[in-house]
Length: 318
Ligand code: CP
Image (cartoon, rainbow, N blue to C red; front, side):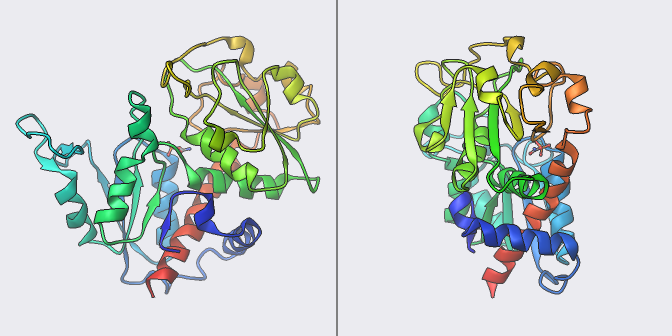
């Protein structure tokens, strides 16, 4: 594997999950692979899980790790070509990227959508510039339109907890006070559509995701109907994708909050969320604290998904 930005980069999912479970059972078994190799993790946005789990995964593989928070301690970076740089941005990404590449073997990048210009976000300008100019294998630690390490961890978690060959997985929109990107729901949909699970997306009208991510999923505007018989409930907020409302909040209706009455409609479903989660907006305290909530093992699997991806990138260096 040379880069990792979406589901197709990982190849057959059954093999990826098998490798993940093998690594989980023996996470220090490949320590020689990363010896004298350096991972650089570059954050344009805040993170708890991605930062810690990815660093831990690299350390499990014997790597050295450098972490750069671009907005704390680095020069402010210009990302547009043609700009007269007479403002507060001291360095251009086009010099910064190859310089960063010269100090490491593999690069992980986190960069969120701006939610102002849909075309710019969906071009994935930042991570694509790293792929083009760094000279290194690059993996996404969440980009403007996808969060593949999260979705891979979600898949591993579902495979571990499922009791049916073909579970019903329902991704439900839930309210949030701030405008959030579509990266997590896009990516989750992309990965679920690559399985043979029954996959349903439910959201208020106006929150339709891009058709290429919805794919073969059934879209159901009635949340209660969607949740009937579900084996997994995956809650997430996202801002509007469709024009003219791209990046906007259309609703904060707490009638969409996942509560115990909604969970009672399911087939004793497991509750999932990528975290961080706003309690009593996205999900009630009792649901997230219930014995059917698997948000902590889901987050723990971020270490495993990252380790599979970094291991494969290291193997690709040879
Ligand atoms: N789920 C996730 O990516 O969490 P962080 O934003 O804390 O990394």
